[in-house]
Image (cartoon, rainbow, N blue to C red; front, top):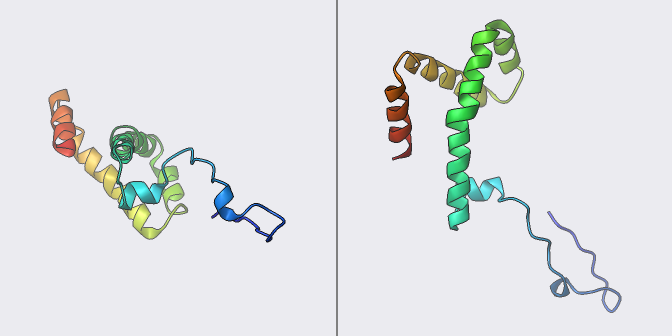
Length: 112
């Protein structure tokens, strides 16, 4: 939220100034109102990061220290986000025993 104090005949009016450009695209725009090609590109980059970097990192953390990972998950986020993280780990563990071609097929199906 931006606030600008305006005093008649003492300061500039609101229309005389411009807000600085935002450094990144707001998350609400990406998730709910993408209306420019940049929004679509950023949305795809975010989804790719979740699927092929963040989720595998979560699985590796779970596999290396299961007890401490589960203790940490119960203290972070809401019940819905905790369940989503655990379901993601479950899904990835079920799909991990396959050849590289299976990984490629997963990626293609996820992004078609």
